[in-house]
Amino acid sequence: MARSQQSFLKKEKEKQKKQHRQHKAEKMQERKANAEKGKSLDEMLAYLDENGNLSSTPPNLTKKIPGQEDKQDSAPKQMETGTKR
Image 1: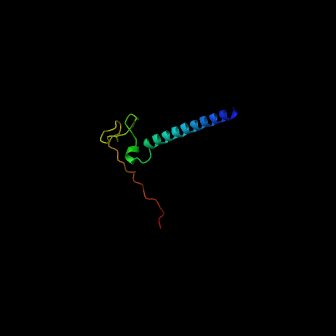
Image 2: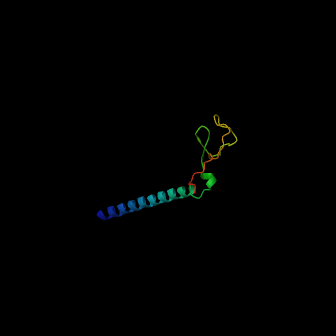
Image 3: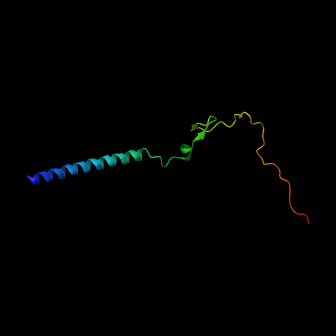
């Protein structure tokens, strides 16, 4: 009687192992199908809109921001310093 019980337990363990391997293979296939790797740079970029929310489209740069008049983007001119000879 002990022999038949041992073989039954072996069969049950094999079934469980097989189910576990199948489940693991299904999860692996699902991960491969939904992979984030390999996307182009444009698909991975995120932009901030004027309200601070993330957006997938670039902001419209032609809009004027209130409180920002026509300021120049250049640095102020520096005076020449040095020693006289």
